[in-house]
Amino acid sequence: MTRHAIKLPPTFFALLLALVLTLSFAAASGAAETSGIEAFHASRNDAPVWVGGKNDGALNERGLAVLSALAAADRDGLDPSDYAIDPSVTEPGALDRAVSATLIRYVTDLQAGRVAPQKADPDLFVYAREIDISGSLERLAAAEDPKAALSNLAPANPVYRRLRRLLAEYRALEETGGWTNVPGGPALKPGMRDPRVEAVRTRLQATADIGESEGDRQLYDAALEIAVRAFQRRHGLEPDGVVGAKSVAAMNVPVGERIRQILINMERFRWMPDEFGDDHVFVNMAGFELDYVRHGTIDLRMRVVVGRQYRETPVFSDRIRYIEVNPTWTVPPKIANQDLLPKILKDPGFLKTGGFEVFSSWQEDATLLDPAKIDWAKLPNGRVPYRLRQAPGKTNALGQFKFMFPNRFDIYLHDTPARQDFRRAVRAFSSGCIRLEQPQTLAEVLLAADGQPAERLAGALASGKTTRINFKTPVPVHLTYLTTWIGEGGTVEFRDDIYGRDKLLAAALGL
Image 1 (cartoon, rainbow, N blue to C red):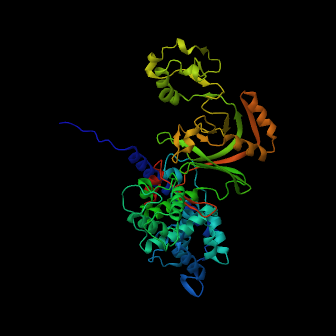
Image 2 (image 1 turned 30 degrees about the vertical axis):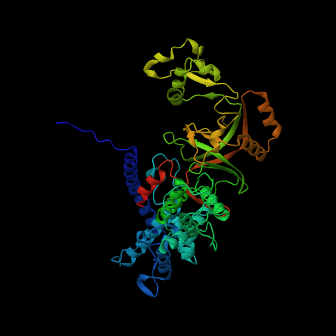
Image 3 (image 1 turned 90 degrees about the horizontal axis):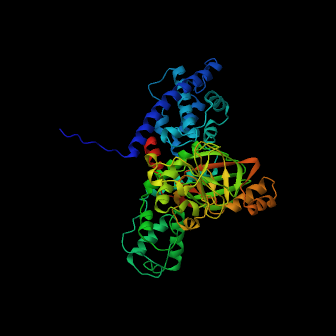
């Protein structure tokens, strides 16, 4: 009998692992919740909190206010049915504890997320917040208005609050039927007259990209071009004003799918701290952008290039501790084997032209070798056993600046000689590290904020030598992955799920 191997996609295994980890996490967190709840009630000598009063054995005003707040959990993208009290629980002590347990389940979901980050996606390296169970119950029990106190527990991040408003708006839009699709066909360009132009107008009116028009609705006029370009920009498309296949596809994403995207990204914000730091660097891989925030305001914004789909840039936070000016580049083994070796085999002069040095091993005292005397076609197992290092210079893959926050992933921000990639709308071309559009500007503003003279950077750059400049105060850096957000100006942004992380999180959330 012939056996046929069943090949399953990598995403299947990631989803399976995420499910197993989620179940394990739920069991552990359940035990912690029970312990915290018991500690809270024991500290009050089991005096009732949510029951008693005028209606002994029934919920009191405080308990009813709490249930009223939980019934509105969908405001934060949560499911109110997850926080319903079992009607069969009537014994006062058990009912009191049931309300406490439900409250903690809600507070945990609201503040730390319904699922832990690494349980939703094993490739994430952010960590869910710890919830003070007994302390949270104490504060809610003491609050004059427990309903308002619960509402205030939602993440304070302003982007989260904007997403919450957007969720309400898109749900209202869904209730009225959402938006109609734009029919497929040839690209629509400014100046054209076509029945499909009217469909584009109608679609853009649904999301307030353009207002009502009293003119020829089938004419692609200047006002519509402005609206189309704005739509393209906020969906990460090339803002060329041409309504081609990609623009039509973005317009035709159903409102229900956009709601799901909002819910997914609200969950991500629950994993994040409310404060990123008064001054910080914020990179959104899905948006291919970096923001430098100074005193709570965006001081600098630039395009970035992130890891390609099979070399994804990880999600984590750290602190930028120093800058290397005129850096060398020590080639990671994976890149040496997969990227450089084919080029070396094709062009024997590749290493010399690119300014690479070849060392006999990764030891500090390794011998410098002559690459011309190495038979690159006969390496053991077809792998590079040497350490390759590229000297500073115009051809160096890291350019002139390298921003270091030493981490186990060997990820950093850096300059690049490949400037053409910044002109593209989708910028996932690196081997994992993040390439910067304006590295020198970022270096200047960071050092200025650190109280260091501009001459120090200029002198290091002019020397041509590798120079390390330490920060007196390391700068927080957050590498994130957001496919939906609202900017400071109120612009609603959507991006494609380039790494498939939305899909993993949606599965973990049951969306």
